[in-house]
Length: 250
Picture 1 (tube, helix red, strand yellow):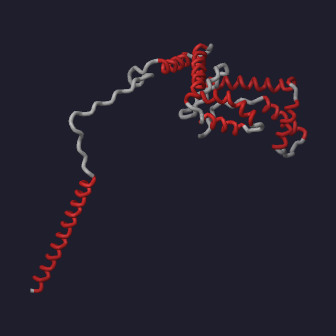
Picture 2 (cartoon, rainbow, N blue to C red; picture 1 turned 120 degrees about the vertical axis):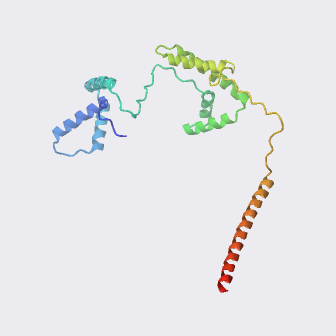
Picture 3 (cartoon, rainbow, N blue to C red; picture 1 turned 180 degrees about the vertical axis):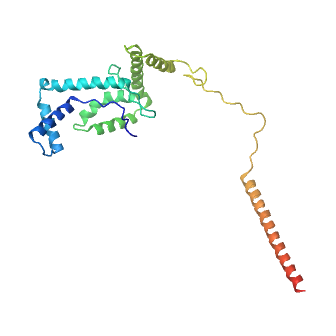
């Protein structure tokens, strides 16, 4: 997909302004000399790390001004049809999503696995936890599932009541709570819809289906009839040719 030329220029970070300043200084000190990009970037990074907050204020202000410019231009920018939508920013004040029963189980058993296997990698820990979870019975998993359900209910309440939450957030949380607590009744397509009853079987005996052997016999008979017709046609045509020859010789 081609880039939209009317889209506002992206934001420039404080570090990007610092690198641009270093490049200008290098051009003034060494005019006409080529620059090794990897070495130059490495030196810029090392110098940026050793700079104090007071030295970085100038670049931070430039980045802040450019961010305000970008936000102002993006408010009036209308993307062309078919363009990808901008990903919605995550709300930093939103509550953390609740863990599943398996993750509650992992938080309880992870310390013991680390203690029994010192120096074990994160991947091996996850593998052992998965194997241990698979060996648990439904009775053993019940406490973790109950705890996960409580955490989920608490999350939905907080999501519904937190400041800045939209009406849609509250409706989603209410709908999720209703699906868990309400009996399975309601019209088709509604939350908690009842399973439709099966249709009653029609009165009388079920319709008979043809036996496979009968179907095969019928097919063979049709083929035989076709073969006989073809043979009769061939014989007739030969007889006609023979009679023509006989009459011609007379």
